[in-house]
Amino acid sequence: MITSFEGRRHDAEEQLRGLLSDVASATGVNCELRICSGETGEALMLHARHAALAIVGTGRDPDRAETALTVSEDIIFASGRPSILLPTFWQSDGAVPETIVVGWNASREAARAIADSMAFLATARAVHVVVVPEPKVARLLGEDPGSDISLHLARHGIRVTLDRLEGSNAGDLILSRAEEVGADLVVMGAYGQSRITEFVFGSATRTILANPKIPIFLSR
Image 1 (spheres, rainbow, N blue to C red):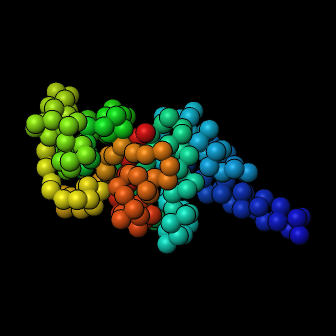
Image 2 (image 1 turned 30 degrees about the horizontal axis):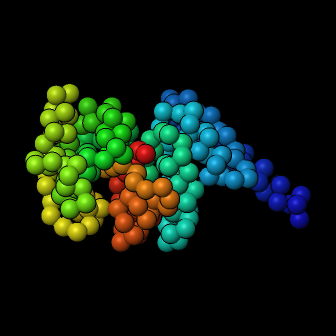
């Protein structure tokens, strides 16, 4: 049985190597394949620490909440690097994001996300800073929520629109706004110290995070 398993794993690795080689040749991108075993989350986290950005899928079964983000959890919260969570079956045309939605609550994590994503923000045609002035973040946001961060981005030549939205669930509002403006990317801080589905937008959006419709850029 062990021999049979090892044989299937070897065949799968060779198939993956061939696929990656074809993609690299077609795109002109240098690639390296590393096969992780054992504690996958920890192994991926350590690899991510030696990269500028980690690009993470949502898992093979988006209907199972425990498989959607538990593997990427270690990357997002412990690697010290930003990550992009890709939707299931997402395909890119190779273009950089043209419309970006930034979720802003004046937290350390949100500030880090903006700094980490500046290369994307600087080349976008439109950046929407979305602020939901909930009571718990009112003190950080100040008297004119979102104006300071919008000014900061504008000073870098970024085309900024400030959207203040009212509601009780910031995550739902931010993601809905992203759909409305046809965003290619959402930039958010990864809040909390445990499962991301419990802290970034709240448990009400577990399904959205398990199967996002557009890429989500996250920094911790």
